[in-house]
Amino acid sequence: MLGFTYNNIHSNTYDIVAKSVDRPILPTLRSRQLIIPGKDGTYDFGDNTFENRIIQIDLKYVGTSFEELRSRARNISYWLSGNSGSKNLIFDDETDKWYSAKIYSAIGLSNLFRLGETTLQFECEPFAYAQLYQYDEDYEYDTGLEYDTGLIYPNQRTVYDWRFLAPYFNIRGDSREWCGFAWSYNPHMTSLYHYGTVKTPFAITIYGEVENPRVYQETTSAEFTISANMTAGSTLIVDSDAMIVTLNGTNYLNKMTGDFLNLEPGANGFFFYGTNPQAEVTFEFDQRFL
Image 1 (cartoon, rainbow, N blue to C red):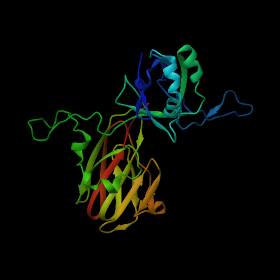
Image 2 (cartoon, rainbow, N blue to C red):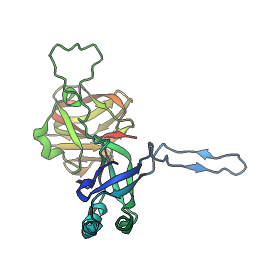
Image 3 (cartoon, rainbow, N blue to C red):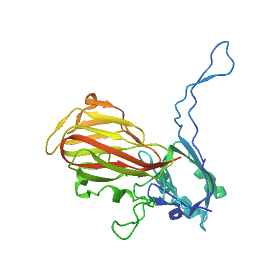
Image 4 (tube, helix red, strand yellow):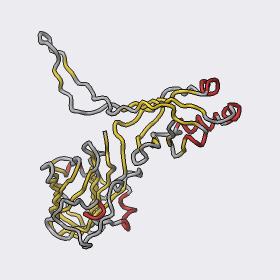
């Protein structure tokens, strides 16, 4: 049997465990097909996007008293309802990742009372997530390591940590962690490593002075330029997940030319171009897995 955590509460709290879990290895690919009259088959113009992932859990009560379970029924209902919005769903056999999940279907608690079993159906975002630093190893520079052996330095080493700027960069109020570097010369090259298995949107925040910043992603040859003269204290956010561009809180999407960037699985190299940069740059993202 398997335990799980949902809405920051572990199933053991209520003497409940997962008897079985239907956790699909892949979310369903969204179908976009067109039937053409007089032509066999269909025309597939899908864009490789996914439907929500459905995770079904068969629950079993492992306590000693169904009367005691019934007395906690309202607390169980409140826990599973999530109260508002999606909550993190984490399984004990994969604690490094979470699903953003919510229950929409009715919960058959009466079956749990009578039979000791019931079924939950979580509707989740298509992907599993992990924190930015989750898989980094603690390598140190200048400790006798060979630099040409293919060793990948983790994200917090290849780009510098600017956590004193945290009040500026918790822009979404969610769980995404961030790392960053000081930008004082043109161009500046840096890199990120995405341990996930699917391309992942991320946020770039530039805080400080620079004119017409341009970011080129070496891995994909994609780039964008923002027509802006940033002065001391300016904050520019380019978020490919929310698909927003703001300068000091003002919508600047019409000042952007080029593409929103996404991290590819593996190493991602970036070049930052701009006139007279004196700024700090941060990246925010979660690792994303199919």
